[in-house]
Image (cartoon, rainbow, N blue to C red):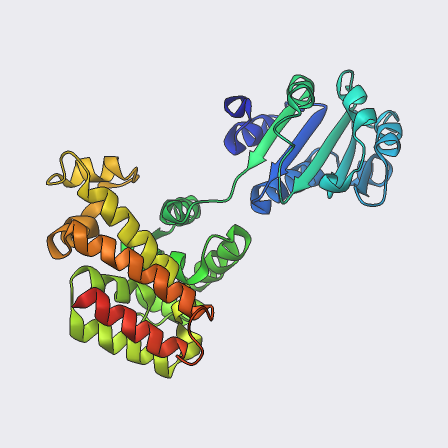
Length: 341
């Protein structure tokens, strides 16, 4: 069933060639793509002078399914289409009237259902099938942390800008997987670039996003990968002195993710090949496996298992379990010492 869902690119390709469907059901945990599709429809289907009489926005918590259907069945006034946008569609209590309408939708109505923070119950297979037959069913999933670098590179490339791997990682780890916030930060970076030099560098990231190019999670990870004890301790001390720059709460997921992948890398049948390790870890680019090749040389499989166990222990302590007194800075030092020795 998931394979039949439309993709963002396929939906936008149709919209831009003005191949409109009577129904767009947009659902999922990542609001960024839902908003992008919905906003395009709201801004481009109708001419500005047509929108006053033919474009309506309703909220699922304020209307019933029957009221949505009544509005959808109206005819456009002096236009080819009427656009009906239903936000917060996840709050509609009973969808029976909608399901009946989806079986025979108005061809002159473009109904956009925005169902955020979740998806249709997977058990409602007939409801899903009805939506797919009526128009577009799109699921907007949260981007995985490992996919953020590719998203950043592609977004900047589309804006005629380039970025080096270090800067990409700095942004990904500083901002995280909230795509709306991430795009906002990238747009801020783009505005700062001179017309004659559209390259994003660590210095620009430091200036525009506020991430130190010397003391950050990327550099800490690099120091740990290469078992650079002095550098790792420098960075940990910097964070202890500057809590706003970073804390154990942001680094634990990053370290756990690295060592979890490193454990998988140890099981790769051809772990001496960077290309094969990249494929094994499902990385888009082979260079992403470079740190895992170094990590396998510096950390045995047994040590990696011990580190993962220690990270779980420190995570529990950071949340107050079996830890009445130890502050986060001391827990971070304890973890880094364990990893490097």
